[in-house]
Length: 127
Image (tube, rainbow, N blue to C red; front, side, top):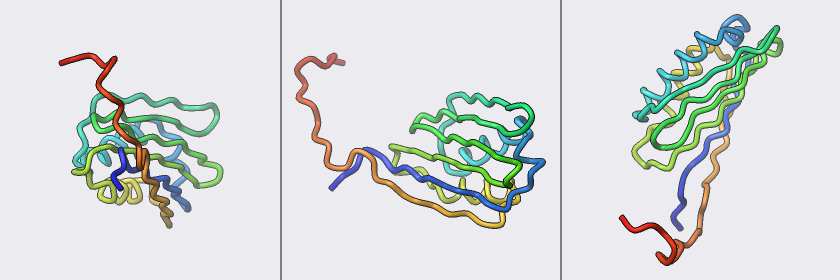
């Protein structure tokens, strides 16, 4: 059964709290992770929450890489979704683990759109 994409839900624990509250550091780490995976970066946006935490997303041609951090818990949650079979997601996650100074990384993999049948071409724009 083919799936439309693969999504990794990742929890990084034991991270360096100072890194988790620095939006520029997080943005650069996420961009490096996407590039290490072989993804094509389209754009990115990150937000710093007062007093702590960062949320952000890197939009890639193949979908997205998103993060939310809790410096007070030394914790970061990452969502990596891709519809491209050539993307090496584990390489990007290794980059993030090192950048965040994480002691541990737990990953759950989900197949998205498994078993979805194509929509008949009626009503779709013709190219």
